Structure formats: structure tokens, C-alpha cells
Image (cartoon, rainbow, N blue to C red; front, side):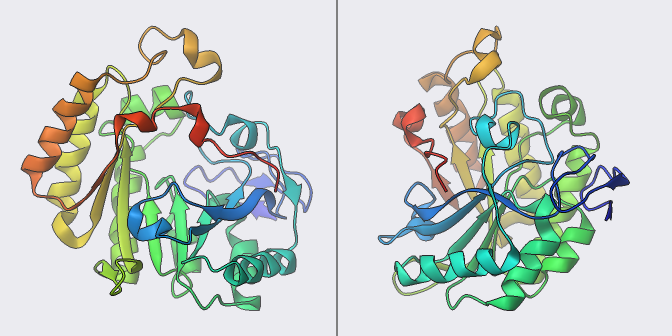
Length: 288
């Protein structure tokens, strides 16, 4: 295929097993892990876990990525859409609350095919960077129940510097608006497990509290309580970024309290993490 899936519009050649685009991936999905996961928001993980499928490769290059082994080094196993569908069935049989597709933008056609082969009986969660094109979202319309996009940056200059993502703010803003249009307002069942809706996630970066506060304000202005907001403090310096003068540490309690106070004042509903989440212990083993 000639690929223009993501906002980069590489116009690159991608065959089944290899590709020349920004993501460097072929068209067949490469998967690093299929397993119940208990580290999501309470309304996603619940008591039985979220049925996560972690895809390898990425359409962003965040300097601080904690999943570097799979996002940049592409560690994983190639699967067909039929094998993906079988993975959904296996997770359902394990009793998970949902099927959670993590970082799947660059494999969207194959993901769509897998969901057409088998439509899970539990909600389908699309867990993504937010840097997602209208083309991908149009393909997913009617197949996804819950969107979990990131909103990482309030300014394009920071997005380009840390994630090599030009036009970031407008792209993510429009993507989240389309997600809300597709799945509607947040809906939880009687047990507090999410069935429909959008959760916007934001990870606080060390020495970047201004960015976090501005993201909160953007989300408040654009979407209000049409979404839930998840404020994350689990940042751990990884790889080369450990030597970065700003990003080479976890966030401080003072930084977290400053941002959390702004979230409380904003009126947005959602979730916050405990500072103890900033540990590498929460990074899964990439063993499929």
C-alpha cells in the first residue's frame, strides 16, 4: 500500500512485512503483548482487568517513551487479522471488562478487519496518542466504544521538540472532537465500568507544569464535561533521556500538587494518580 494513514501522510510504500514510512512498519500488525492489564483508570481496569493488545511501532517519537522497546525497536510478533480476532476471544474468555487496543493507528486497516471478523461482546477501547488523522477515525467509526487519547502538549513547538509531531495541537483537538461525536458522553454501568465515551489522558512532565496547566485549560474550553480527564504522574526517565537536564528525573510532589490544584479548579471530572505510580514496575513484559 501507499500509506497516508496518519497525520504525517508519508506517501510511503508499505508491504505486509516491512515499510518505508515514519513508523517503519509493514501492514501486518506486530503485537508485543496480549493480556489482562490492571493499571488503567478504575473504570477501565475494574476488578477483572482490561484486555490489552499492545501494538509495536508508533506514529510519534517521544524522547521519553517508556515503551521504547516496542515503540521504536519494534519488538513483537507479527499477527494476521484472524489471529488478532482470536486474541480478542481469548481475552474475553479470561473475563476482562473490555478489549483495549493500544497504539494501533499505523495498523488501522488490519485492526478494522479483525473487528469485522469478530466483534467483541465487551466494549472496544481505542487507546492512542491522540495524534490521529480523520482517515483513521472514519475507519473506526461504529467499531469503537471508548476512546482513550492522550493530550500531551499545549504548544506545537514542544510537540515537535519532544515527539517530532508537527501540527500537534490542532490535530489532537480535532481528533478528540470527532471521537466525542462518534461515541458520545461518558457512560458507566452499575459497577462503575465504562461502556461508552472519551477519557483524555495527560502525563505531567518534569519542569513542564505550565504545559500541563495549559492542556487542562484547552480541554476545559473545547470539551468541558463531554469527556473525563485523567491526570497522570507516572513519568519515569527512560533510555537516553535520563541524561536530559529537565527530563532526567521524576516529577516532584510540588509540581504534581500545582497541576492537580489547577485540575480541581477547572471543574473537569475524572481521575488522578498517586505519585507512587512513577516507577518502572508498571511497565509490562513484552512477551506477547
